[in-house]
Amino acid sequence: MMSLKTFFVLAILMASAITLISATPSQEEEEEEAAATSLRGTSRFLAQTSQKSVRVVKTCDKYPSVCLAKGSAGPHCCQKKCVNLTTDRLNCGRCGKKCSYSKICCQGKCVSPMSNENHCGSCGNKCKKGSSCVYGMCSYA
Ligand SMILES: *[C@@H]1O[C@H](CO)[C@@H](O)[C@H](O)[C@H]1NC(C)=O
Image 1 (tube, helix red, strand yellow):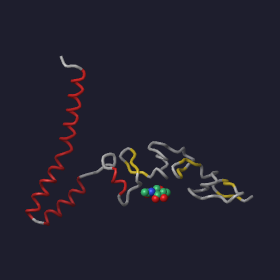
Image 2: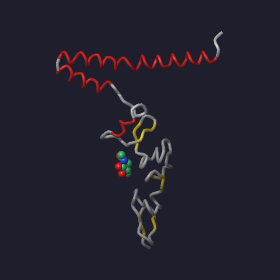
Image 3: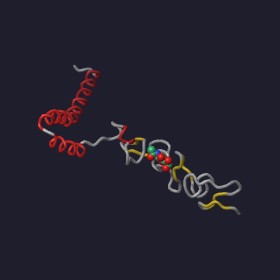
Image 4: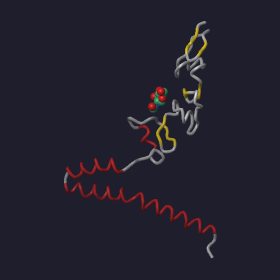
């Protein structure tokens, strides 16, 4: 009879085998192709590289560095998406921290731009001393 432990070990092995099967072929293929192309010439190599960029999708959960690339929405990774935790209303300060609908995310905190004296109307818009934030505008009444 199979013990529960053996079963789990087998299950894990199966899972990793499936992951390997689904993940490696393209990589192996690329390496083989790269090796082959160096013999065959540059034009095919160029065709390969452009094809490769379309085929391989690198998600930030596996490749955190993609969020640091140019054009990324932000340097942090939440649920396979690049975000900027400083300003993302759906991931404000940490992944999954949502700001309620009337609030915005400034420096990783949910604030009300209608009344916040440090973020009046928009992030970083500080009202001068003695003025208060009313409906998103610094008021000097
Ligand atoms: C994140 O957002 C803040 C505020 O807009 C900005 O200053 C900062 O450069 C952003 N970070 C990145 C890496 O995009």
